[in-house]
Length: 213
Image 1: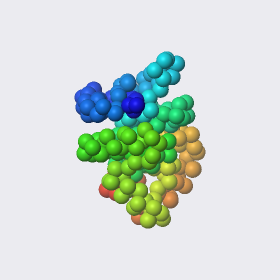
Image 2: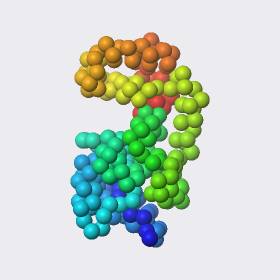
Image 3: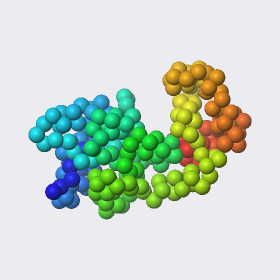
């Protein structure tokens, strides 16, 4: 019995390449491909109501352009269709992306430039509900676990990502539905963990350490 796969990626060329890769394996069938998070949820709803049923696995890019990103979409997929596994397949290896995707419910996290057989193996493992991570991703998580005093919390990562867009403390607070004083408190902890004393330095160090994109 073949594994049913759905692809979520906003780049048609990438989708075409992944489709060719997976359809060359007789044990995998691509049942749908979409370009956005909203479309992914809509199509999954249609498949759930149809005779064919839901796919076993969703291959999820994290950067989906406008609208919901891959992490938000992963969380929604897992909430609405808990029997469907999600494998993050992306070019990003920043700690914030890795932790965010796994906490949202992704079964695995692999990079798009992984060897062909590694991607196929990852799809098989993830479809079966077994955790799978690219070597580079494993290393990031090992570094996080072995240096817990410098590891950023999910909220701290969210604040850094927001600051990277040029948002002010007030704008960050509004975006994350927290108070401005809470943002300032998080920044104090962030600066201490990163060994800096300004947001410019914090963003520079965070990018150097691949904590954010």
